[in-house]
Length: 111
Length: 114
Image 1 (cartoon, chains in turn purple, brown):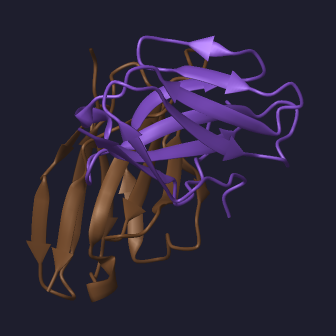
Image 2 (cartoon, rainbow over the protein chains, first blue to last red; image 1 turned 180 degrees about the vertical axis):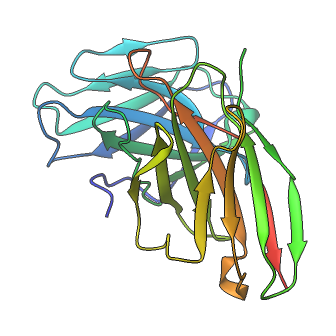
C-alpha cells in the first residue's frame, strides 16, 4: 500500500496557485518525496522531488514540513493544462526501488 | 530531451494469445520497470530489471509474464496467454542512479484483450 494520503480531488481557478497536500507520517529518514502527475491516461510525468529542504523548479515548488510528515506541492500559476491526477510518492532513491502509487489527487483547473 | 518510447500505442488481442509490448528506455539508463494501470484504477508496479535480470517483481507478475532486454536497447514485456483482466495501460519506465533519482515513464501501450 502507498505510504501517502492525499485528498481525492481539488479545484483551482486558472491563474491562481494550486496547493496540493500530502501526508506521509511514516516516512523514513532516507526516503524522498516525489511528485508525479498523469494527464488523461498518459504516462506519469515527473514534477519534483525532495528529501527535507524545500525545492523549486520550472514546474513547481515542494514544501516539506520540518518533521517530514507532510508536504505540499505548489503550482504557482495553474493553467487548464495542469488538470491532471497528481501523485505523491515516498521512495528510496535506490536502484530497483519501485514506486507505489496511491489514488492521487485529481486537480481540476477551472477557467 | 531524451524520452522513453513504447510500441505499439494500442494492441488488441484475443484471449489466450501471446503479446509482446516493447519499450526503448533512455539510452544511458540502467534500471527498467514495467507498471500497469487498469482503467480507472491505480498505477501498479509489475517488475524491475537490472543487469539482465529481474530485481523485484510484484504478485501480479506471475508465470504468464516475462521480461527481456534482447538487444541492448529494447526492453520487452511478454504475456504468454492473455486474459480479459490483462486489459490495461502498460507503462515502461527507466532510471539512472546518481542523477536526479526520478523514473522516466513512457507514454504507455493500451492492451485490449477480447
